[in-house]
Image (cartoon, rainbow, N blue to C red; front, side):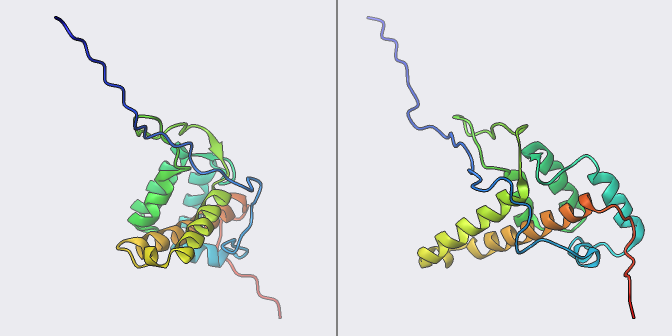
Length: 174
């Protein structure tokens, strides 16, 4: 007797990703309104660094960006020492969507990363607050710091994407 067996994987790794509640949100507590502060966040101290960053960012919009694009931007920030591995992980995770095999899904689909990062942080902080034991778990403080750093970095990038100036001059009025 020949018995053929088919195994069906009933455990799927699929996740639709994070649902952004307010996809039009463009400002939050991490929004930069001063070029010098945004430059400090991104560790830019020279005019040529600002010009180079702006040239790199010309093809990106932090309010309409894909996971594929966030990976490129995140790598640039990580390799230049602006963000650490925890914040880099937030960038490359994108919206957190995965297919049934556990591979990132829909990495080409654009979304508002400013709103995504902000809402993910708010939700995670709320979760930790309602589950105090989680906050003391190994790696959680570092993960939260990575989320904070990613939020500040993406908001600083958004400032430079929307700024038309290439210098770090400060206007003083007497």
